[in-house]
Every structure is written in C-alpha cells, then in structure tokens.
Image 1 (cartoon, rainbow, N blue to C red):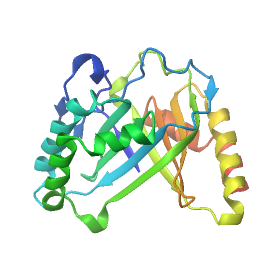
Image 2 (image 1 turned 180 degrees about the vertical axis):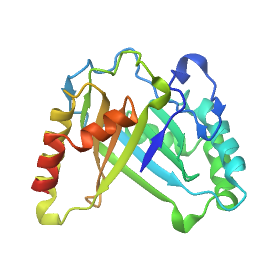
Image 3 (image 1 turned 135 degrees about the horizontal axis):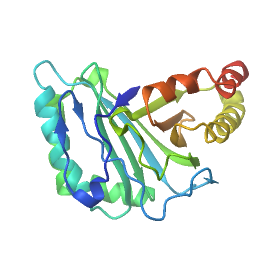
Length: 231
C-alpha cells in the first residue's frame, strides 16, 4: 500500500493537520533524538501500526475530517512517536503509527479522542475492505534523507508492505528483510525503513522515500532483486 504526500512537515511543531487537494498531509516527523542517518538500531519495545481505511461511498470527506480531529490530541499522548495519515490515489486512507511501548498504545486506545473516532468508524468505513496490522518493531534504519530537506518534498512516498511467511520460514524472511533494509539505507532517496512483526507471525514494513522516482529505482535495485530471489 502506497501513499504519496503533497507536502511533508513536522506536525509536532505546527500542531495542525493541513488538508490539500486529493491527499491528507502526513504527521510524519523525526524527533530531535531520532536515529542518525544510516545508523541501524533494534527497538524491541516499540510498537507500530499500519492501517488501511476504505471509506463508504460518499463518506470520504467525513472520514478525512474524523481523522484530522484525532491527529492533534494523539500527538500529545504519552509515548507517541509518529502518527502519519495519508490519502491514496484510490481514495483510501493509509495510517502509520509508532509508539514507545504496548502500554503507551493501550493508554491511547482508552483516550476520549480515540473512543470518539472509533464510534464514528462503522458509519464511515467499509469494514470488509479495511485492514489493520499491529506489531513489535524489530529493526529500524534511517537513510541519508532522514534529516535533510528534499528538493521536492511534495513527492514523498510512504509504503507499507505485508509478508505472511510459513512458520518454518519466518526467521529466514526476517533475516532477508533486515538485509534489504540495511542495504537500502545507502540509496540516496531512502528516508526510513522499519520492520515489524505481529503476534501471529505476520511481518510488515513501513518505508518512506523522497520521491516516486526514488521508490521505483529502489524496486529495481540489486538488493531488491536479491530479496525477491531469496524469498
């Protein structure tokens, strides 16, 4: 699932969600103590979410408004690191959340603003077409673009991919993903590459790239080809 933003900005500093034509601007941000570029770290206590919400017919604007209402208070919830909301070309919404721990996520789930949003979801979202993945972060690496202003930030691409390996192959797929993330950090357009695992063994990745061109270049890179062959 891919979301392309019209603009990237630090919503923590501005405390506002800006809605632009076709796309919902991301709350994408790297905190001041973020991992240095190209430095890989393992953060086993951190929890991430990738969610895909498909609005009911005629409900896209209402869903966008509901999401906008929940972003600002969520950024002040203890333990929140990142809360990204993107609108895809097909009208679906893509959310990426990063929390310091399962406890901080649990506390967020009990807040009034999240409960209010959850009560609105059934009327706004096609449940059968929506998916949510929640997992523990087992590897994270930032690329050279992590702390730089890009030449065209309006083209930033955010990606979530999901892998469901056979139980006997889970460790091999984890290893292959880690190798891919490490190698990808050297690509000039890579911003971030995070790997998560759900309790049921499902693996999912969150990636951010400077532009669609950088993403397409990555898809044809030797490390990506090696990953496909390996898995």
